[in-house]
Image (tube, rainbow over all chains, first blue to last red; front, side, top):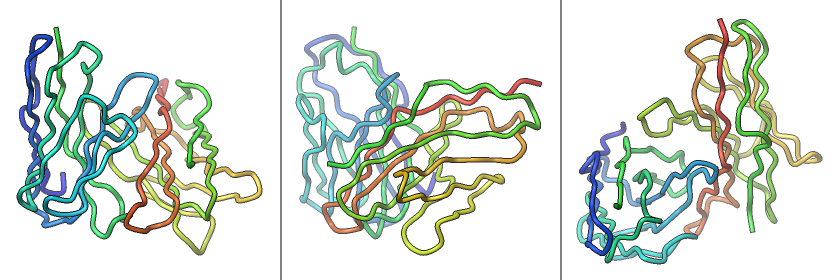
Length: 112
Length: 115
């Protein structure tokens, strides 16, 4: 897993509640990414980070925010969870930027 | 904008048969191309990548892919399927390796291997 830990691995939450997913890396890689995986859609980029406090939006960023206060941690927050955000969320890291991505094992989020 | 097309969502082959998973890409600049594999309940693992140079790329587990610019394709092949190859396979493209380069993934193909 290239030293990537995602937590929690599974979470069930109710519509309207805030949720934070954590990605922790021990590789000291500069670039970190959050993807969501949905059947028929493959993986879609939510947000990414190219350094501490440097983040940018991906193709499906609406309803999500991120923060990176330390190199090793990249947090994904759903401000007010909706059923459409039920998905499997993957964190990935890379360094340099387009070296192969290394993925965590994912967080399965269910919004009821 | 870059994009990847993986035709079909499921491929089934017999053990020992040829595996062919198709990938076509769109890119406005010379692309970087990748194949990833995902086993159940796991993250994605890199199978192989093409950046520059030799157009036939060999990866892990006996897989290889050939970059064909004229066909905008990067099909994945393996001469003889093994039961352990059953997984989901994703093709991905990036336009270059700059700071703003990001991977775009295809929708994935599930490979089943029959005994």
